[in-house]
Length: 70
Image (tube, rainbow, N blue to C red; front, side):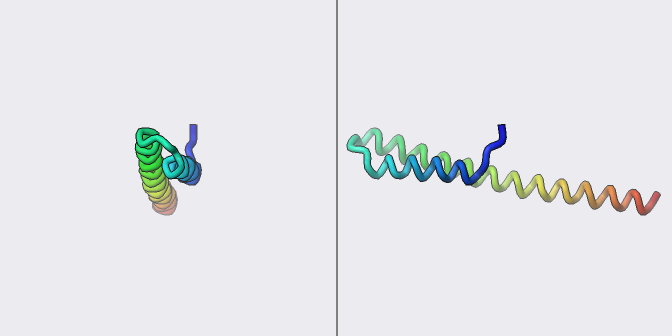
């Protein structure tokens, strides 16, 4: 299952809105915690995507070097 960082941010926004409007302190705290968790996940996914893109580029570059050498 692929997860999009923007989808995580959308879910974080939803939770933040619920945290701001929930009448119960417990619900506000739980929704606020969920919002932070979704934002953290979005950031981690973006970091991983950058890493994977760099890794992929390195592999392509190395493959080109090997082709030129051979």
